Length: 329
Image (cartoon, rainbow, N blue to C red; front, side):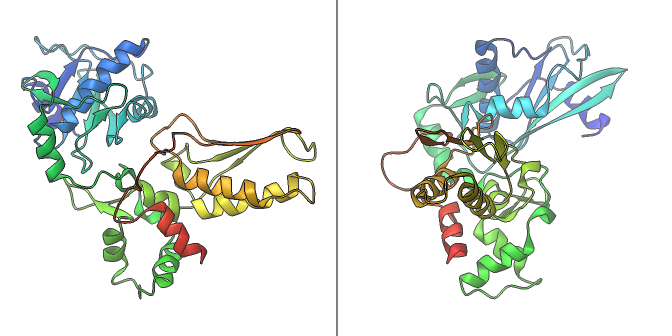
């Protein structure tokens, strides 16, 4: 965003897609809840991209400014993603006006509406400049407009589709019997949900699922995608080993490490199955945790963020399970 655009926003009144805050306070849990409630309400409201502008007095429009060290984009992403379902696509930028730093949180018009607060299950919306609970008919209306609620289809803002491995992508489509070349690759990836075109631009970004399966360097965008092996049994290896990369590579690398660390005749297969399930079914919206494999003398445990769902399987354009299943054949 340029200065001209920001000044234009500051001159406007608060509304459905615009909110001003003097500062952000993340020192208490209640403050975090209020912040997330506002973000959720703006994201659920109609009107395209929303903005939360930090460092400006609402009524007087006096520019007070903030300290860039007060909060980071990663911190905000974590606060929002762990409290909203599905995760809301946002980004943070700093803009200098009148020698003061203004923070602008961009709240993108995602395709995963309606967004819900995990703690209480409530859907929020903006009515003018006020945050309110969505009515039943409003929820139904948004659901009808946005039928796809799959986290794997969530766009990763600022991701570069050049970081998707073309060989992995082509291998996947070839396994399905689909011919792929430079002319049709983009269309195939979009139809499969690997990439998605921004609703406000013609630029493609990768989806969460696309990065997880087809990018060897997805840690640039999904840093919590890792397997942490805590080794308490074999002093020939490090106490903590971190495995990252595309999901299939992570699974294979972990299997190789387990064979090396564990005793020669130890039954690896059950642990390997547990690791595969942990990778495929973990909750990737939980940003502050990773998969852990704890190797102890008397037990081995595999811990995956999230909870197991009791019931039917989610239906989506393409799932991580389906992708990995095809590529493992």
